[in-house]
Every structure is written in structure tokens, then in C-alpha cells.
Length: 510
Image (cartoon, rainbow, N blue to C red; front, top):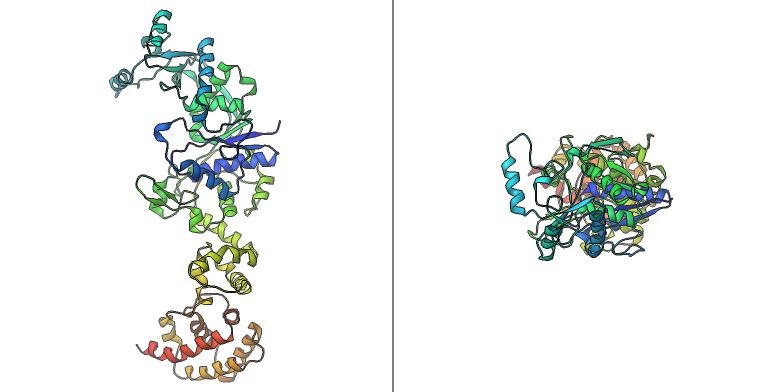
């Protein structure tokens, strides 16, 4: 059977990179084996619903190139794909569990349960609604059938709880962790249907996974404690034979490895933990995303894939197609993976180096458009070629390449004071004149002419090239100086060199 996998986030805020990694692993498995990748919005917790969060999730997947086969925005044979829109369906499954004796009505008020919790605080154990306490509480296991019926008829509030068996070992196989077992005595009788008729995560998750024919549940390690409850639900429904395979992913850890990576860590250390910019609808606070920091989707996914998985080879740079071919759940590690922003930057930098100049030019052109700068496609492609080795982020293009589009606003005065010396600077008007009269204005011809000039006047590279570079760019940074001179053109090169001849004396003296 071809895999059917789902990414099932809750729209309670922006999508953390841990969630994107979960989506990625689901997507890779589906694509590798010709299966189906489903987006399901698990919005049963209406109190924590955040406006705009679902759109953000969909936009994130689209930017990453994780194409959804079925979901709320594309439809599919198992629609609807928002759990809030599936609400009427869940009651019949809760009633099925009531009829089979695997669930029960609980009429305990919130105040009564809070009092029980408060009374056990500080004791040897905390209150838990389970096999040891349920027979002392107000539920259909302790009340007569007539009293239960009467309470239901008069509209008393109730929830429906799972009846967890006492003192039983719950065993299941995890693709990543191997055999996993839990003692049922450690589990509480989870609420399946809330008083407003909305299912809880546990109920909706299992029912929907069954109805949508999910074959693999790939999710974060934080859901591992919920797995035995889900196994018991599959068993109670009689669906154990078609229960999906579980794979619980390791946590993404803080850079120091001490705990799970959070937004606060990103704020503190100066890197994003969300894929896209997110604006808090209540406070207006903007959290930066990887996209807006200048990351490209493929290296972003490449980086995420390695946070928990390895291909078993020395290869580190993968296209998405190569990740699909190489991926396997069995090569995901159990241990948490430390997030390393410097490594993330490295992935982005390595990928930018491989982008053809014409494609890179299209990616950076908006930066020029924003500044009202218009150049030919050929010019922008050549600028992109010269800068591709120097870019970590797409956003670096203007900082690194503005010298191609405008003359320097200032000069490296500290370097000028070292290099613009009597006995040497007097030769530079001649160099400018030779550049102006050069018949073949190419990088190679410029280099030959400059070397000839140096030989004739007994000058070294350190005497001449820094001065030319500062004339053209204002700094000691940038691509090869002769390539820069050719790209900006002879006229602009001469203009900048003449300006340097005029201004350098005053800068050195001041």
C-alpha cells in the first residue's frame, strides 16, 4: 500500500521550524514511495485559535515547495480537512465507545476537579482521573443508568472519557525508537468529547487518521506520551489491524543542546525560528523568518533534513529531489539535534554558489527595483556571477554589490593613509591615462597593463591594487578588481579614478 501521511498542525500561532521539519519528513516519505501528502488542520482547541495562523501554515508549505495533495485549500476525497468542520461526525464514534464499554460519561464539574487537584498538591502524588479514582467520582460508572439518563435529559454538562484499562502494558513499535511500552496505570482517562461537543486532540486525531487511511504517523517526540492513549483507542474501536506505523522525531535543541529550541532562544541569539515573518495579531510584534533573512527554500529544507536525519554518506548538499531519493525513516536519530545557525548559513551560502547567474539575477532584481535602479539583464547577470561566491544570503547582494551601481560614498581612509604615499602616488595620473587609452578594455588586458605599469615604476601589487580598488569601490572588499572595472565600464572606471586623484590627498591629510 502506498503511504498516506499527514501533517496535522494546530493554528495556534506561527509554524516553528520543528513543525516544518515534521512536514518535510512526511513529504519526503510520500514522494519517495509515490504516496499522498495531506495537510489537516487540527483546530479543535478553539480557545487557542489564532487568526491568520492557518494561512501562515499554507504559505510556509508553499514557499518550501512541499506540495500538498489533499488539504483544506486544495480539497480531496476525505474533505473537510479542518477538524472544526468535521465536528458532527465525532459524536457517533464517541457513542460507539460508550456502547462497547470503552468510554463513559463524566459529570464532574470543573470546580470539583480543581478542588481535588488542589487537595493533592504537595502530596506524594497528584490527582489523576484514572482507574484508581474514577469509581469515587461522578460518572456513568458510579451512577445508576436512570440517574445518568436523567442528567443527560435535563442538559447537565458532561464530557466523555476513555476508560483506560488498569495495570496493563501498552506496547507498540516505533520506526525510529523500536519497541515502546507504557504501563496503563500511568495514563489518565483522557477526555474524548468535550462539554461543547468538540472532540479533543486524541479523539479527533485517531478517528481522522483511520478515516483518511493514514499509513504512517510521523510527528514530534513531544507526542510520544500520547501514543499509548492512541493505541488504546485503535484497540477500542477495533482498528488495531490497520493502525498506522508510528515514528516520533527527535527534538530540535538549543545551540548549546540544553533544552528544546524556542522563539526566545532565537530572539536572544539573533536568529529566526520561523520559516516566514510572523506578525502577532494581538501585539503587532514581528518575528523574523528565514525567508525574509535571505534564505532560499532548498537550502532551508536541506538544513532541516539534517536536524535528526543523515544519509549515511559524506554528502551534505542535497537538492529536494536528492533528499526524496535518499530519505528513510530508519536513518532518523533518536537523540535530539542541536540547531546551529552558522551551519544553516553555510547551507544557504553553498546553494547560492550553484545558482546560474541568470537565475540569481532574477532572484536579486527586486532589491534593485526597490531602489529605482535599472540595468540590463546582461549587466545584472555578470554582477550576479561576480558576487555569487560572496553571498551568504540573497539580502547580501546589495551590500556586496552596490559598488556596481553607484560610486563609493566614502573611502577606506585607514588604508589610504598606509598606501597613498609620496614617491608613489605621483604615478597614478599616468595609470589613469593608460586605462583611458587602452585599446582592448577587458579584465585580461587591464591586468597586463597594470603589471607593465608597476614594472616600469618599480611598484609592487601592494602599492597599486589597493589604490585602484579603493578608487572603484571605496573599500578593500569585493570581487576581483579588474572584473569590477570591466563590469562598470571604462567611462565609470575613469570617472571614479579621477575622483580619487582629486580627493585622496585631502583624506590622507585630514
